[in-house]
Length: 398
Image 1 (tube, rainbow, N blue to C red):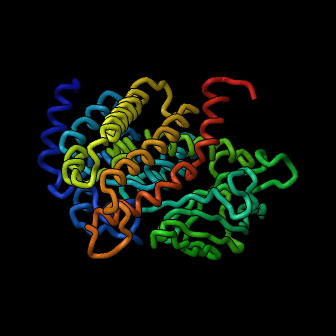
Image 2 (cartoon, helix red, strand yellow):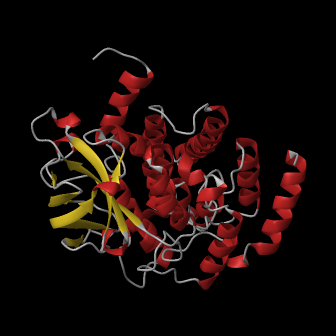
């Protein structure tokens, strides 16, 4: 099929099958990240997910045997264009499609791919990440959760922290120590296991905004079959770093039509020019600098999205490399700058935590503004990304 025909058929299908409510800005709580422990509040989200999954378009570049559509890069970019044209919401998000799925495609055995990838593509399971630990801080390789070898299985003891969505997850992918007598990077393995396993427990961590997106997760003699080891024993650091490259690039999220990631989720209900007019009485006449800043921010957003798409076109491998740290660094700075600009536009209305004097959006954006202070740390701090860029991209000496 040529691209023109593919575009025409894709456009017709999307026009006929994407529910109207799925062509609007995402509403908190209406997204689907997989599994059944946290349900979307919008029934149309499940209609949209089912229809897209049936075509393999929740993960369109994955092989058909694993629930994808096997689209070539050129077809994938056409699909993205058409999804953007109707402002379609991503049918499926979460760590399954954006992190562990792409990693399993590269490092998983045939049996592991057959077991895990189709349920991910259908949105049947939710995943969480077991990386950070209470005593390790930013030194991820300093983790101490220990998986002791017991022949055909490991016994895991320890704890993880900042495990996003662990209380709603069905499975965890996890870095564990399997050898204490070698340099710390060399004694780590990458395993997956069910969150319903005996000995796994979670405790939500309440944040300043009143939400609990994070948990501390505890392991008390958790039995993990050796068949759940991803990659080679004691070579988990390589697998774990590759997974982070998928997370930081945002390229895997593109496959779910999440074309701007966090950038999309911080958009105000009104376009920025209309937002300016709406709050114009609160702005000083000398705020021409704010207007220039808004232009710069919008140019950065457009450049970011176009660069992501170009990366899809130009990459010769299916897996992103160290340059993904550039995406993570730029996105973190963009999110903070955009929310700061919104705060300047709204003035005192932008710092409403609660109360009838503030609209729901003003309250939500204030809480996002506070939450976004962590984005330059989460998923690898800006300083870590700059080090990676300096060493792995620019080739600068230590």
